[in-house]
Image (tube, rainbow over all chains, first blue to last red; front, side, top):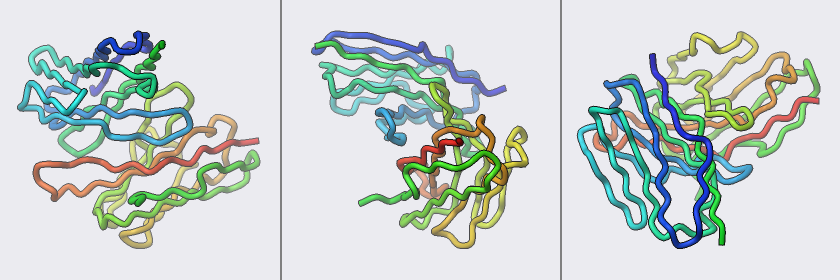
Length: 110
Length: 115
């Protein structure tokens, strides 16, 4: 079956790096995504990675993919209070359907 | 400019009273999705349209229906809302023909309250 798991909470201090982890089960996933959701808002795409890549960097964001272990991570450098939100990992299966994890609530303390 | 627009942002409906949520897109994408997100949970796919072809998820209750009269619009109809249907409803679009990128674009969501 298809399943995506994330830890529920992460707390960091402003200026530190945050690392949010995700595991998934579908080895045929085509793309893996990170979405950000602020309170009461919809989903904002942060970044995505193709399944044949192992790293992608986009400004303060670094995505690492270990396909063998089915492990995905999102690193946010120099975390700011505005980064406080819920972060969802999602895998896209061959049919285009997105399977979301439960979300990691990131709390950034000044 | 918003590319996937959901109306209204907040909807309050009475228990058992039919309600319709609206989604429109300016992207001309073939695929439109409806997701349900309950509090503190992951978004869960209800169904999607590929052009006019409707694809229902196996565990989507019969209470939830959808219409797509044209490429731009898609509606979510809840025939008899129960208290358990209170959630954020997210619409998304995707163009599977984009090649390198198959990013799904999400609307801001409609938060449904059932009283």
